[in-house]
Length: 125
Picture (cartoon, one colour):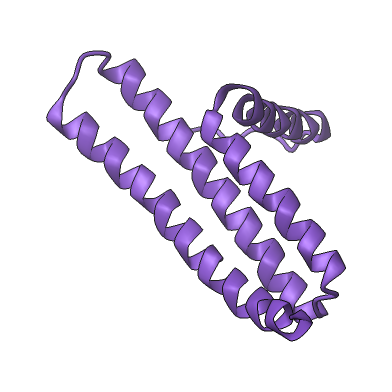
């Protein structure tokens, strides 16, 4: 396979495609709205409760992880539907596994959120 020359224009276009992926996630994937709502709540709580820089790093990493997993899940579901529009046992398995990855990421993120926010909330009470 012949390697193409470096092109700054092509690098900028790759960002255009990536931002289009974010747009598709926001406008077409209903589960993304749940993640966005939780993200806004967590960001507000982080400012109100004045979490530390290291806590911010953990929170931002968790937010990015869950959103990235949701995007991969959505991509896999769309690809599976394209490849096999009819129901198929292996397609269901693929979709369930990718949805499970999002669930694991969300559960881990929720646990990290509890570790960070629960002591601060208890201290306020």
